[in-house]
Image (cartoon, rainbow, N blue to C red):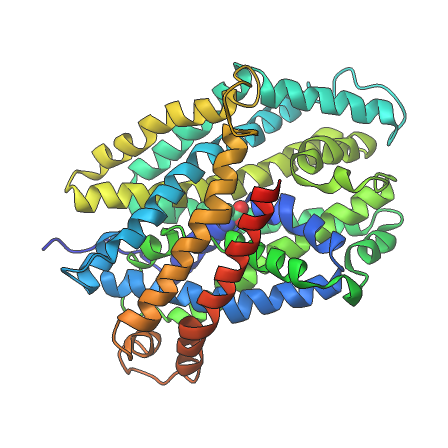
Length: 463
Ligand code: PHE
């Protein structure tokens, strides 16, 4: 048997895993969700979801990957040969491939915005007073041009794809790990610079209060369900990513410590994004309409409005879209790696071939996603664009389904002491958390994730 590739250092494996977790979800979903759902009260619920449910599921995936020692499908096959449990891996594999198709499009937009920040054309011809409806209108039009026309978003999606390919072709250590080792520290430095800028703007304190003012009356079942969904998406659970990455973890990796570190850093990034976004928005009086700080509008309209209003517009704009691109790139790399590892290990093809077989079809699928937002508007699934459909299908259905089955598999099917062995590195040290984690994986996580799944399905169908 060939010797299995591993990450070469502890820092590298943490950087790569954090790189997968930190993505667009931290920027355009978390801050507005927290602000709209009770501020600090939401944070308490969210932190609960991350550490009581997210970390155990993460540990289940880590254990599966490291013990199985193979890709998202092969790990199941190695642990339970002659059984059909590998189908869970197939669901995760499909989910990850579909996510890659639309996530790559957004990654392209971040590059496109970075480029137009560098040339200055993003801010050319914008006239009107800061915060005025006229300026908002102009940036909204620019967003439509840059995301919904036929050619330019597609070209940028393809550039993002090629960047992915170049890194992935270099392999696990020289490609994925090295990239993470450079880009993740850069991401944190940029975040800190932004925090310093934003928190020293006039009225920054009001912005922080606007973000965090605790309102426990807003916490209800829907909010808890949303928090759990966001935590799972943000931690990249249920898509085979962590199983695949953990198969590259050396045998002496402390899984519990890794999971807690990754989850804490992912939360820290989300929290810092809130500290950046709300003081800036408040300072320029852009907080009138909550639509202004959600999703694409937040990133591609409201924040450019902020940069337009402060000095050194281009500098901040370039820096921000660089940050976003880094966050997105390290995530797309991890998503693509699920399929690459699968093809490389299951079909016994060289890594180069596996990379090409995975990335080349994405040129086509991402084009469909991109065009479905503009020139191929008629390309709909029900009432949704292909882009939105894939987003909903993967995050609201496939991701929780595979997470539930991973819990069932690890909690009920594998030997009773599986988790304990993995968390203690086969008895090398003791772990007070092991029985607790085992209990959560077996009884609590699957039930709560199922509740999230059902409520989201009801929600989607009733729309
Ligand atoms: N965790 C990433 C984020 O927060 C999203 C992601 C989803 C990454 C799926 C990989 C796979 O944006």
